[in-house]
Image 1 (tube, rainbow, N blue to C red):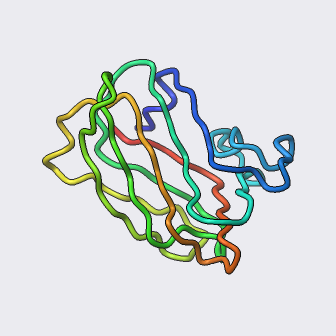
Image 2: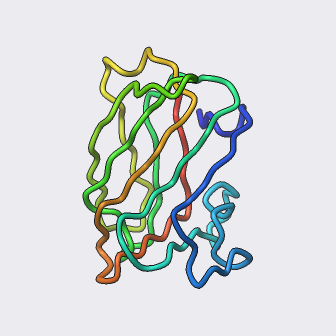
Length: 139
């Protein structure tokens, strides 16, 4: 189940394409519409930060990228309510349009976190742009 449908959160991104938040803004990663997406501007690294109102145990996450604009060398960082690091783990998305599921290692699943940060050190796009149609946190 997507944790983001049951708990309040705030989120930030590293950039928005041409600063056009009405057409390419971060809110489109979470609206469940197939025709909308967050488009980053060019450059690396790109990131997405999610702060949860209540600590949650995260078992995995799901991304749906636009093929040709996927993250490559990527990492997730989990933080506790006091800001202390809980877990850090690399993940390697494929350059495809389909949703991709990533599981958190078992040792970190029982540790509640209040903040997550996804960092995309590189992209399949020559200019470092990332396009995300959907992002879910799984509990």
